[in-house]
Image (cartoon, rainbow, N blue to C red):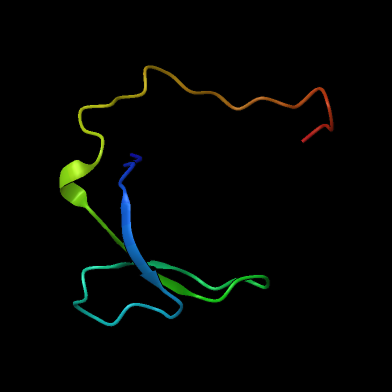
Amino acid sequence: MISILPVTSSTEHACTHGSGGYIAHASATYRAFCVRVDRADGMTDVRAASAKAGKSSVDGT
């Protein structure tokens, strides 16, 4: 399931326990972020009818 929610704030560190934020984990390029969202204004009742994987004809990925 995917939820699309508006971001209300973010800070450049992992969230503390119980902060209500979501952690965007660190990678080789980016530091960890704590992202807070507005759950009340997100998209609701959106469902995928179908999905499938495919191979790109451009670069083969």
